[in-house]
Length: 488
Ligand code: NAD
Image 1: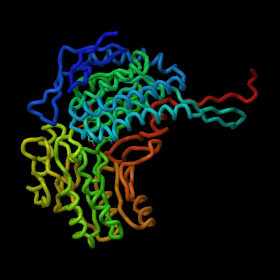
Image 2: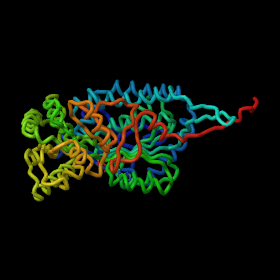
Image 3: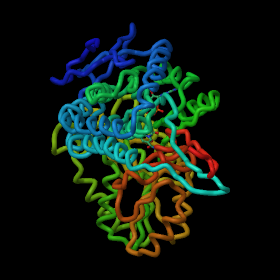
Image 4: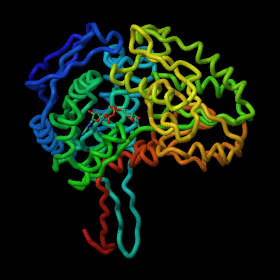
């Protein structure tokens, strides 16, 4: 097997090329990845910049890989995915270190939560495929059996904001279902995907079952989703790209899932544990707000406006902005200078439109941080209320009663997640039922069972990931009907 070209990322050797058919390959062109921890000085690597020929080669390899992997029994598939999960755990430090430098993610969060979650994603799907039983029943004088067939090569496209965790979350069900994959990670944070591809080879995935293509979305990404040999497209990213991918999928009649943006409400009722709610609200600045699930629209019952804000500011004041490698840091820099510019442009337009910036609202000098920002909009139609900013910018609005809270919660085109704080079980159930979103957390946030469905309504997405929902998506379901008196 060819030895990959590698970049030295603070002592961790990371392949810089594509993995195609079990071989590492480069491209004539490259793109650079720099570290948000020290943008001007920390060039990390030059990464192969795939083109349409790279995409075609990867799909050819995936088609061959599918012939082997799609026929591999579920027990053997599960063993390999468990081995991959173990290797992820064994390489926790290296993955955490590389992702922290590449994307700016807090190293402590990577070590404690996200790398472990990556391993858990593979274990969950390994266990699910072994536990799966074909559905079987008798009707109309026949035995009916519903079976899952692996669908074929699947393209998996991931965003830059939680690269390792999201890649594992999307690749695990595709591989468990028996599909070969071509992974295209985001160009702003391509490095942890290369570590994952190496571990996949080491775990024993056959050549071509797991392919990695690096490059720019509009170039190699667009070529991958346009290839008619691809039988599934699993995408996480922005609504704008989701639309383009949907068109490509329609052209080839390929099922696709799209996990897109969010603009979740965090609703606080007067009967809630006020301090817990305010603390949760301040922690929506976590990961510098680069979280699709974040509750970025604070909706607070009018009667508790003043005490809520006092506690919110108290908790926000405790957040430490700093170097993502430092365990004392709570808030990391934004991932890219272009993104920080985009976040600041939102805030500047908001100021100009007459919204009140009551906290923060400026880039931090000397780093890519942005001040944790709170805005009281003049109207629910304000751009900062209606559009995903994807930075540390929250809006604050009040409501008179439950009906108004629900009306405000449902007033954007998004519908990914909602967070509700209340002391009443009845209210919790009523509001959860009335909110239009794929996920609702009551008095808690983020934690969920991985077998539950995950996805959004409205422009937050199409389809559901999680548990059997993702396995069904990655399979062609077949119904077999055998006449009862068929003899052997
Ligand atoms: P993006 O849409 O710009 O890019 C996502 C991926 O798509 C990247 O790998 C990119 O290279 C690729 N891409 C871009 N153009 C393409 C094209 N024409 N064809 C094929 N691929 C193409 O999104 P982003 O800025 O990387 O990510 C941020 C967005 O992702 C936010 O909207 C965020 O809310 C969303 N997100 C959603 C979830 C979720 O689970 N719903 C999770 C994380 C992030």
